Image (cartoon, rainbow, N blue to C red; front, side, top):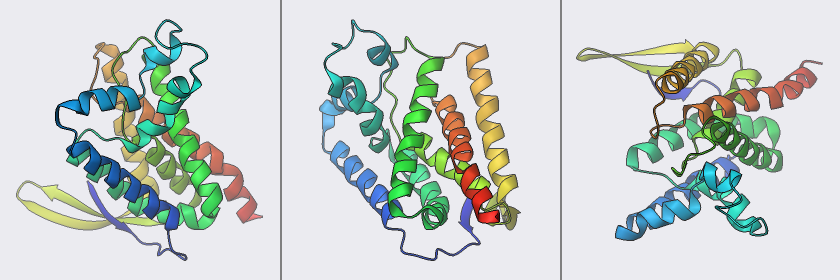
Length: 224
């Protein structure tokens, strides 16, 4: 399923969402010019679980090296498809969550979900030396918030069926629940066969769950 748009128009200009998209694109353009130095760049600015948990990897007093990658990793991507997929999902779901929270709270929420997602991934692979990069965890948090705040919304979705394409309107809760189910199945499968590398499925799951839980009070207060 390929989401095309949601059915709730933004009520205000999505400044934070567009700024996040712009920063991610700019960083990726910078990456394209690094050539052979790209691997070193990702190793420095990506989040490496072993570097965070092991004092032998990073000096305890070097707070920037220890905590900085939790944030910088959200703006680094591993390829065009990685970048485009993440930014498209952020564009579809981010503007409405930004509407509801306001600019400042939304930015804090976005970054907080990203950090929480990174931690959950790190807990599933604390000895990993593979850098984790991408905005997927933060965006998963936005999707979890959308799931809570807009249960009656619908997502216009493109569904490829062999050589044909069908466009249908899917309830957002179903679309997002299916997305979460896929992440969960992939995450459990990856753990069961002890695979390393690839996609940080548990970062997606953690971001979504944290994002949904954080916005439950917002939904309740709106109902009252």
